[in-house]
Length: 335
Image (cartoon, rainbow, N blue to C red; front, side, top):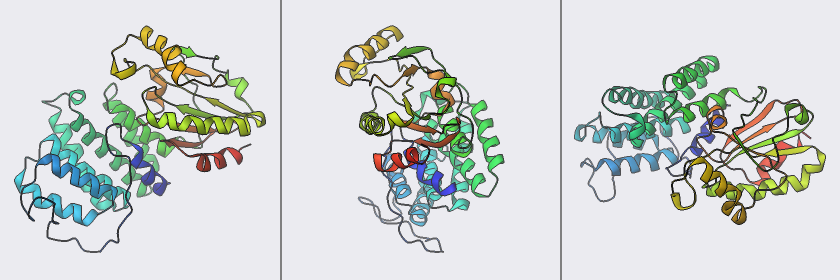
């Protein structure tokens, strides 16, 4: 479970890079010298934006020792209470979690979380994307680290407590995603909320009994969702007559094409009209529309895919898209 979570951690990124680098060989000792950085001599002060970029790249490449040397070399040059510094520290925490270097991961995740909490006395979390990202990553990694120590229940309780603490903020979905990564598989699939409806009505729970279900959480602005839909169409053609049902929950975002602000009525009209003409929603896919579903299922990454077996039990929770070759076997074994 831990290795799967570490791999899935790279899917979160509403505004960040999506590619995970390969892990280089690690050594047992931590270098005491900061690595050479393009455009700056070793030990020279970097702009915080450049430091964040360096830490992000090293995180994806799992270059934990080099990243730790770099950030410690930069520590004397910067305000460690700034959101950018905390974001850089959070990236080191994430990179160490990818490499399962949990002591290092917890050290920098705690720095990111504690520093972010201190700043909330004078800053609005939802008004500062860097603070939001630093806090969310810190919470995420601390939950994963607790699970890695074998305390799954404690990790879930910690994350649920953090969700309550930050309920109604921009970080809530990310926290809930991490709760579900640790706790949803093997549990009954919750009932979906329906505020509005696109296409055919959502099947009743009794109508889904005995069916294998794929819930595909998507957004009209999401390019990865447009890449995922043909995979679902292929699955429907292959398995639709064998008991596969695909539903496509979405929510309203407050805007339409080119980011133009829209009322709920205008956005629904867009989805049923101009969007449907360009990107047809399959007639066989019911689309319940509700923000509550995205909160409950931690959909901070679109698409998010949930596979449910014939008894209504969740067998896969995957934030991010999946190619046919990876998704089809999960369906095949449940039919």
